[in-house]
Image (cartoon, rainbow, N blue to C red; front, side, top):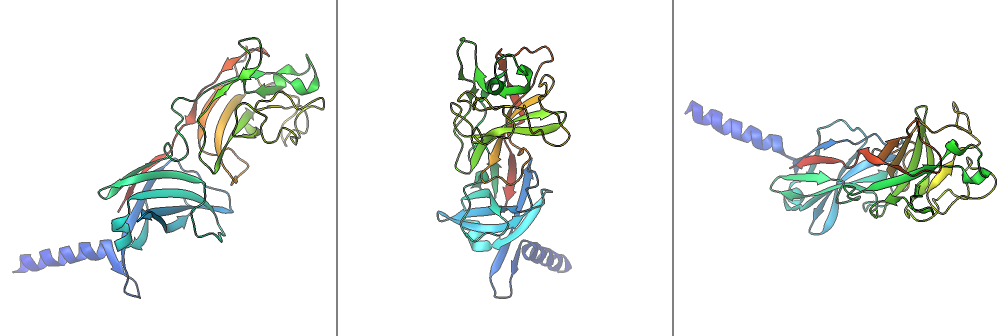
Length: 289
């Protein structure tokens, strides 16, 4: 008899731990996130979880800490019916109750777990590749040629597209960077690898002669950020392509960096250089209910 009572009490304790009732009598259940690779966002943005129930998104709560696991109380009936989990980046003060375009992780539930990844919701970078040259076309020929980076291919003798990147989902843009003496300096955001980047007409760094070739890139010739001196020499610097939220939550590079390459000390200008895989090509995690 005592053993039966202990068993019954234990079963009740497990049930109470996993499900609880709020003051209005609504039953809730625990949703636990265990996510890898997320970085803290800028002060004006938060992460928000969503479950897809009968085709519609239902918020599971917002968070800013990237220490996991984290758990959230969710309506038990809705959580049981959920087919998919999605994580988005949202304004901290958000007048729109719907998810933003900037969705970073997603995955379908199989039983009580969902393997979530950025590959299916941002883009799959498994086949991404890139080429670049060192040159400074905006201050004339043979001037400071090691102080600029352009994502184009000169192997044919004429400029051609240098980046092979997948089309990003809405809410994301690519951004080029040169990490100079440990300081990441943007070369501009873009979505089209065969056109000027977004800051081609407004960048403070380029020279005064023209806007450069119609490809993403930058000449680091003037108005250097604090701690740096322009013109510079990019040999030994690291060239990076990152994937940034749009609108962007921070002036620093975002965690997704599908392509990167340290410029060889022996590199010459106007010669095509191959990029390699970046340090973070996708994010992933596990969601349990």
